[in-house]
Image 1: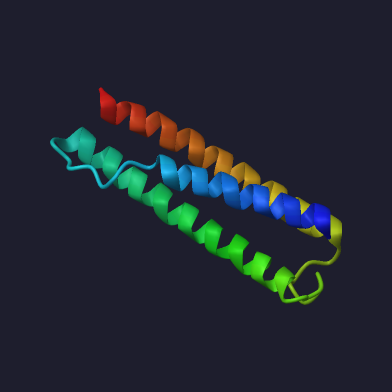
Image 2: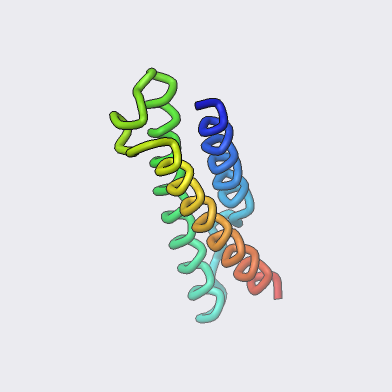
Length: 105
């Protein structure tokens, strides 16, 4: 379970880094900036949803629930889920970086 907890914390940290990298609500000066701002808000919503799920699992683990009670068949099932979440976070991070560079232009 320690390895799972570490993987879970790594996902939470990665998601929080994306949140930290999001600009404060930019004022859209034109249509392009408005579209970028809307996409950044979408990323923010996606990250918030992932963080919520990750933190709920972390709280369940802290409360002593076993994997089955958390909806996982076995440790590999949870590892697979964390890998999927990590992949989603990485994709959102790449989008966030590309969009924030677009705002700086």
